[in-house]
Image (tube, rainbow, N blue to C red):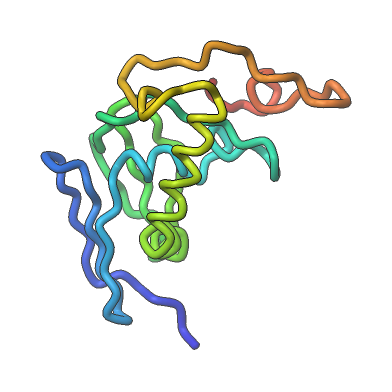
Length: 150
């Protein structure tokens, strides 16, 4: 069974959604905010399970540009300057097909971080606490040792 390949990709800056159609007939409208908070970058995902970094203040994020990466992905530059996530076709398909579940998880994590309603989505919002240092004290993401932007 072959993996779905995009047949169309449209960035809608006014409504802040990415429309993507695949050769299996599926199509998805993925909000820029969802793309940004689930960016497959080390800055967002960390360097392993449990190291994810909650993204806040991304309600109004836009896409300033989007570049192809070979024949397998795109790399958007978001209006907040984030540009290190490479979104493969498989990952975009996953984001589109699991959009509602992923959105619920994002909102749950905002609430667990102490934000009421959807206040954690507002531009300029920041986490009010420093992340807890990992056991073992190794130079993880954010320590500067991995080259990630904080």
